[in-house]
Length: 69
Image (cartoon, rainbow, N blue to C red; front, side):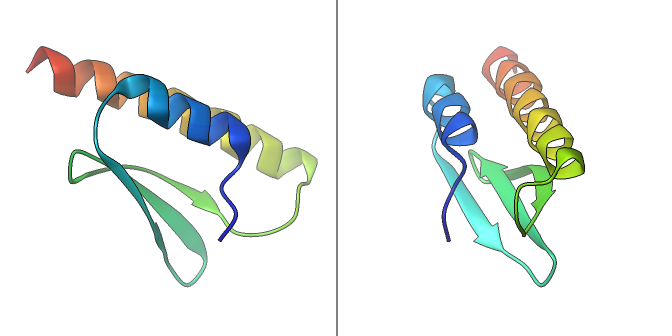
């Protein structure tokens, strides 16, 4: 599975262990063993670009929450 570069950069910047699980219709993003976001499989379309931006935002927020607790 090819991970979008923007998402990979956001995950690396968190400094937390992360993994991507491939589901039937969506990829699941886990930070420190915790499910933090899902994003759709597929080709780049305008709606999927928005989904990617939302996923990156969810990763950043979750990383901040995990680091605080």
